[in-house]
Image (tube, rainbow, N blue to C red; front, top):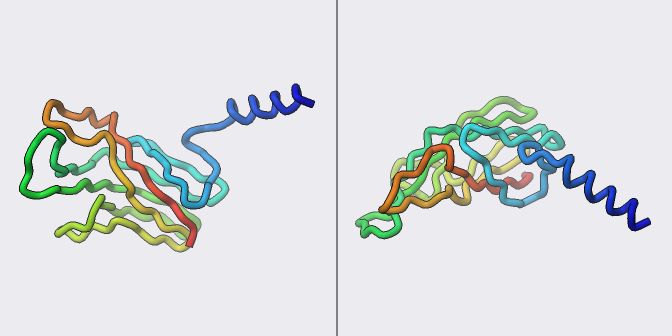
Length: 135
């Protein structure tokens, strides 16, 4: 019985695809730039565009304003295709923190890595952390 259980666990681990995870209500998902996160069981896919605007105050600097980060997403669900921007905090430009679709709400939790005063961030290293819940 242990061998059967071990085999099942190994099959489960090795058959997982990072870009096609099972949807778990309220879980935070990390999405790389220019990649798509597919939730087959929810008929939902989310693409993170590489044109991220980051005006957050870099670590190691003093700023008058905290700034914010803005991402652009392309989302497909059972009702259609949507292109929209999300921001990390309420901002004067009016970008939303969360976007409501017919069946889901997508919220921007964070964008990593955080800017530093000592270096430039390679765009391919950018990751958006999104929280997705059903409505």
